[in-house]
Length: 271
Image: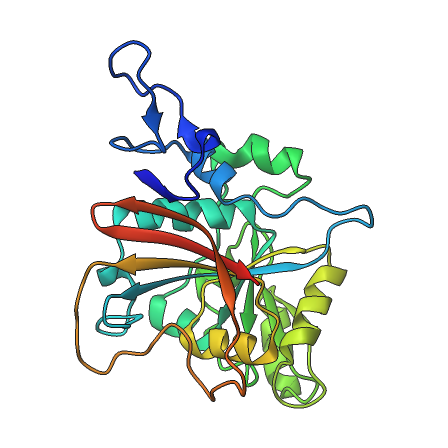
């Protein structure tokens, strides 16, 4: 792993075992520790008024813009991408995910990881992030482990007009239903506020593309962590964000970029 941006004296990593006195600038040629990854992807520090909600997305895309292959993101990912995936989860209070992604990817509850236990405790977090599923219809399989055996109760974000019988089924399964919309669907801005009211200010979304598109359109995304995979797939796979186009494209700035084996691990923030 090596850091491509920003490049300063401060980005030089400790000696990685070369000749005495040699520095491994940016960590090139070695696997970064989880502690280094956590530092590289740390959430912004809380201001004088306390922590404000910060929503980051974590997605992967091929060189030709595919967010999936055969309907799943795993085939275009890598070992390091999955380490970053796990690190971003470990830093988050809650992981927000679309119902379609839950169905397609066989989503499971987040697990506690001993490597991050001390970091989470110091940040005042529980042992693992909650999963928050965005669903208007609540058309979900409540027998899945995501609902039956999570370490932290799974949240379901839905609208005020959600079918009462589906709400009851979700609650019976142990999920906590959170109203974040005045009608059938979920209002992204209301969802952010509702999660913050529950104490979840370090927010992470892993998609899918439809949900990310809604968040982009609503203007609530603060940061995008995008892995660019050195693969070409062609076909008609979805992009990382779908749905209607925004009226005016939103400009983000490059915050950092890491590289390993041709994969680029980028981080963009609001301009």
